[in-house]
Structures are given as C-alpha cells and as structure tokens.
Amino acid sequence: MPAPRRVSNPPNPWSSSHVEWLDAPPVVALEVYEEDAKTILATNDSPDVGFDWSVNPYRGCQHACAYCYARPTHQYLGFGAGTDFDSRIVVKRNAPQLLRRELAHRRWERGRETIAFSGVTDCYQPLEASYELTRRCLEVCHDFSHPIAIITKSALIRRDVELLGRMSLRGGSHVSLSIPFARDEDGRRIEPLASAPSTRFETIRQLSDAGITTAVGIAPLIPGLNDGDVAEILERARGAGASYAFMVLLRLPAEVRPVFEERLREVFPGRAEKVLHALREMREGRLNRSEFGARMRGEGPRWEAVQQLFEVQCRRLGLEHRHYDPSPKAQPAAPAPRQMTLFPR
Image: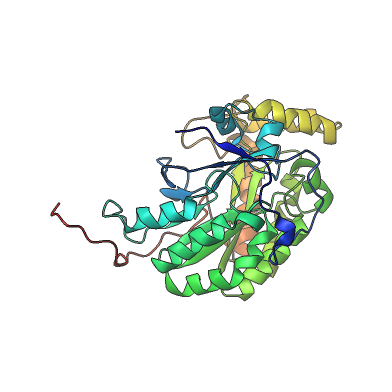
C-alpha cells in the first residue's frame, strides 16, 4: 500500500459551523497525512472485548493520552510511539466510500452484528471536526440499519446527537464515554487534549436525553492515581443518564510504558513510584500482561478491593456492569438489503 501523503494545508476546522473547541489547543505542531485505505472494516479475535468488527477512520490521536495502548501501532507507519502518535495523524479519506462498498458486498454475511467505532484511536478526535469521516461512516451504517457502538473521550460527538438518536430507533446506537478521572485537573495532566471530565459527564447527559443508550468506562483504572475516583465517577455518570459501566486496568504494552512513565513522573512526581508499585501488585509483579483474559484486569487483594467497590456501587446505582464490553450484544435480525450478484455462489 502506498505511504500516506502529507497534506500541506489540511481542512480548516475553524471554517466549519459544527466545531466545538472546548479546551486548550495542541502544544505541538500538527502534521496531517492522507491515505486511500484498501479496507475499513477490521476484524477482532480477542475474547477480552465485546465486538468482532470495528471502524477506525484515523491513525494516531491528538488527545495525547499518555496511557494509550494503540501507540505502538504508529511504528508500523515508520513514525514514533511518543509525540509522533499525538501529532502526526493519518486520515483514511475514503473511509465512508469503503464502508458502503464493504457492507453492500455479498462477502459481508454478518447481518446486523454491531460495528464498533474507536476500536483503536478516537474517532471523534479534533480532526473529525473538519473531515467528518466518522459522521459519514455513521450515515452509511444508518442506511444499512446497522447497530453501532462508539467509545470516545470527545465532546465533539454532540454534533451528531440527532443522527445517533435516529440510529438508536432504527438499527441501534450505543455510546460509551471513557472517563478515568473525576477532576478536570487530573485528567488534563494525563490526557491533555481530550475533553475535560466535566465536559464528558455533560456529554453523557445530552446523549442520554436524546434517547441514546450510554455507558461510562473507567478506562483505564490506574491504581494509586484514580482508584479513589471510582465511586464518584459512577455516581456522576448515573446522574447524567448512563445505564451501564465497565472498568479496565491500565495496560502498558511495548513502547507505551516509557511514554506513560515519563508523563507520570513529570506531572505526578510524588506519586509515580506508588502508582507503579500498585500496578505491579495487581499484575503479579509485572507492569503489563499480554495474555488473553489477563490484559484488562488484575489479580490479588488490591484489584479485588477495587473490583468489589466498582460492583457494589454499580448495584447501588442501578448500573449494569461487566468486564470490558463497549456495546451490548445486538439482537439477531434480518440483514439489510445489499448488492445482488450476477453469478451463483
């Protein structure tokens, strides 16, 4: 596949009537690369997550979350997993056209199985304000009556509330807001360009008021840093209209570890060693585990205490809860009409 082409003058989000820039601008210069992807529907074979198919219109993510498990994927493009991941963003400019073609093809035999958005990087990161690839992909799914699930940290999703509301009545739409921190100042230190936690709670409210099923994800749970926020996050999310919740333990695969450690020591110098020690307690002496079934949860008394707190609070608040699963299983239904073929199979 040809290398992504750098764009000298990417679309200007400030000229869009849909822009909702709520927080501080990026601190590093943005480089945008466009590519014509060959496929857009990605398969997932992990038993740890609740979806088999996903759409990711962007590579890299401007939110610059220090803990992002997707950072190593940027190295496949010849970029770095650190600031390159935050500032050198690849745009799959033909994503909506590809999605329409793939859903219409006879090889797509999954009927109305849920398609997840943001399985890797956030589909509502700031560039979406100008490219609108996520919105156009959602419109394709709506045309096919396909149920979708979205997980995001961005208030930009408010732009599409009306569309998602219509989708919830037809094929089904479900939105999870990832909110690891209760306080804006803590969130800003670790996930500097994502929408502030208070803004995300308000986003849950607006989506819920529009009839869209919403969830809150404490993702990631960082022991020694945000485990004390669990009860407050669940309480505020439920008050905003969320109907269920999930929790994921911090993952530090490959090059994510040095990026996270550097940020942690810079912004929480007095708590860094406590956090790393607590994570090792939950990972049987390691900072990361890559085995299926162990990647997103912990072991031992400390993890069990947090997990019990999470479950007790969910039951008290009436929040459905489970291990990481950003979408409820879609009910079986007849597939939407699709392209016919000239020849028998």
